[in-house]
Amino acid sequence: MKILTWNVQWFKGLDGVVDIERVLHKAREMADFDVLCMQEISVNYHALTGETPADQVARVRELLPDYEVFFAPAIDELSPCGTYRQQFGNLIASRLPVRLVEHILLPDPAAEGEKNTPSMRRVCVVCTVEAPWGPVRVMTSHLEYYNATARVAQVSALREIHLRACARAARPPETIQDSPYQRKPYTMDAVLCGDFNFELDSAEHATMIQPDLLGALINAWTTLDSSKSYPATFRIFDRTYGPEPVGCDFFFVSPSMAKRVQVVSVDQQTQVSDHQPVLLELSDVIGA
Image (cartoon, rainbow, N blue to C red; front, side, top):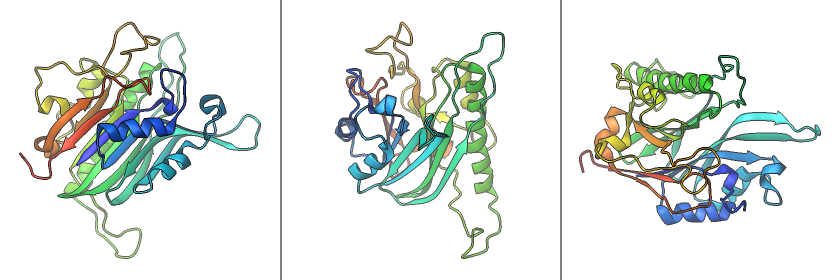
């Protein structure tokens, strides 16, 4: 099972060109992915997309006909002219059966201290897919960049979303068939990915992987060889947002999935976004 995560920056490359086809072609070059998780998808923000298709979700659906596409807008607002809606958020495309979909808004507290900062609502889209061995909860998000107070709150929220789902899997509710109360694919198996805007040695990362009785989350990279430095995924070619390359796009997995992790790799060459794509490969057989 192959999952690719990528902050595609509304499909804008470092050359300033917005090109959805180019990004998806590069993703397919990296892997024949089963699930594609993308952050920063735009609908009707014409200043971002220019002359290219304004509804990027619709265009992705056209270009990935063999995949189901699920979009979760963190922002859904009326345009300044008052004639159409604008949306911005995250997307999951899956060719595996998707048994359950959830869109969960993350907290957005004001910045603490005297200095105010830009801040934008954030969302986690959750698709429980049917993997060869059973249901897997795939979660993707993009955390706040400027407002550290919000980012810290969002890390805790993502962790709690995962732990609550694990608690449901451990003690599922009674069901009523052929109704909204029918059996759900609750599972301990989970993958959380995206652009987290924190680094491996940060306090936010430490919070994300804090142990819990229900298992919490593990950085997939550390299940392979923790002696190697995590590859940079941002600011490799463009230093607009800082002086040095950093790794801030990650895969986290539940402990039940740790032995399935075979590959975590980063394409550090492509420049069709300001972030680099990250690939996770999971074995169908534990320990294989």
